Image (cartoon, each protein chain N blue to C red):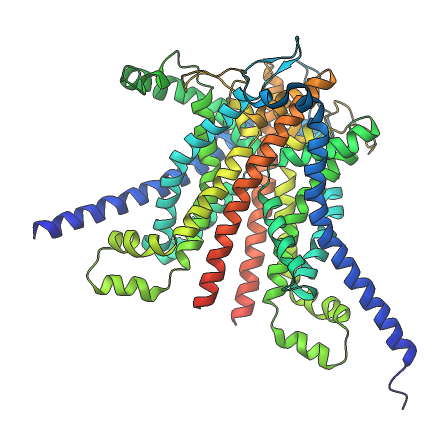
Amino acid sequence: MNRRMLRKIKNGAFLSLSLVATLTGLACLAAILWTLISHGVSGMSGRLFTQMTPPPGGQGGLLNAIYGSGVMTLLGILIGSPIGVLAGTYLAEYGRNSRLSMLVRFINDVLLSAPSIIIGLFIYEIVVVKMGHFSAIAGALTLAVLAIPVTLRTTEDMLNLVPIGMKDSSAALGAYPWRTTLSVLYPAARSGIVTGLLLAIARISGETAPLLFTALNNQFWSTNLNAPMANLPVVIFQFALSPYKDWQDLAWAGALIITVTILLLSISARVLLALLQAERGS
Amino acid sequence: MAIIDPGHAAKQLIYERAFRSATLIAAVLVLLILGGVAISLVRGAWPALSHFGFSFITREVWNPVTDQFGALAPIYGTVVTSAIAMVIAVPTGFGIALFLTELCPPLLKRPIGVAVELLAAVPSIIFGIWGLFVLAPVLQRHVQPWLIRNLGDLPAIGHLFKGPPYGIGILTAGVVLAIMVLPFIAATMRDVFDTVPPMLKESGYGLGATTWEVIWNVVVPHSRVGIVGGIMLGLGRALGETMAVTFVIGNAHRISSSLLAPGTTISSAIANEFTEAVGDLYTSSLIALGLLLFLITFTVIALAQAMLRRLERRSGAVV
């Protein structure tokens, strides 16, 4: 009887610990969100979206940084996602079990977890050094490289979910694989692939480290892709570590904007995926 | 009834080849990127590596004025902060995964799982700014004085908790890293636990085992490879994490015996100094740090992936 009690106590203790661990994790998320909202909301104002980043001590907004982040993220996705989708198509359709596919799959998973700062150094070496200066193009290329693994992985997974019968039907009608892929597989896997794009945007729009030495920063309004460009993450980094109260407030406001954007993207990606699964299930 | 149009068929074949080649090129490009990363890092790091030789990774000195650079302090900082992160995040992540797979009411399973995954989506700079302005003061006022008072005089480990409570430093960076990698470890472990066949667990329960006994004696042994893979994946993240660490590490190029003292890591040194580095040797030394980080994380992540893959194949064979 005593031994049974001991086992029960041990069971209870470990299960309680696992509950505590879960609550700790949730508390961290709550604490971060709460800090962002409480600090960020006070910095929210119309100025944020209409004025440029101010000089030290001055007042201003984040317009140039928001624009720069938008442009570089968009360019990054436009360059990176087609490569990711095509490569994913190769892995899922053409070279499913080939040696090359195994290697690409493995390397892609490594790239998926590789430190982004390394990718930044890579682009610095091959773009910034060659061009002789920092530029928005270099920043966009960095983000593109970071977007490829995410889109590749989701595209392959989603294409693999398409029922084989659909592919066979298309082939039976005499369609070549390219026609089947474009007209049957992509439409069937559309919401899955869009999910991958959303996740990739979420992943790259908060990247900071690799932009430090590719796009750098720009205090002024600039639409020149061949020149340094302001972007939210680097502005947050610079302003948060400054001693000026106005800059710090802007950093918090920027942090709130970026986090809300990314969380919304992640949530929509998940909702899309859930809808997709519900559709499959019915 | 001209059903077969030879021109049409030829065109189809051309499209087919073009599309196939496009996908193949994209796939090969992924390999080229990794190769390009390796080559460009080696090339960039070469001046520093040939100048300092092997001593680059054994020297602590980091002096831009006299052009003397050694990587020991950043390597030490990277390893120690990641170790602290793993000590905190592995048991916590295990607990979360356990809760989600075995204990959680089905209704809450999805919301909590999503919340944990959202924590993974928060960009690292947010963890950095939060760590600096919220976590560091809390640690400085409440946790570190307690550590110094209660652990500082212990033999053997006492020196780890000596000195003033700076707030920022190695320990704080480790704690922030732990929170950052927690969702990755928890999510991977959860997925791995889910691959355990219910039949095995039911057999355990049928023998009268408690929930914990089933977990420890059935679930954990069955998913051992996956658990280690998940931990290594988290470790890979922790080693390369940049912005969150840069905010709270204090950026001091020295090795202190105390965990409470400021330090530096490979990635935070690059982030802090790269744009300000003047002179080829300085820049090259920072790229050499990047090369080291690349080698370390590549090894860790590749091992993790190999383990997770093995598990996938095995569970694929069982089902």
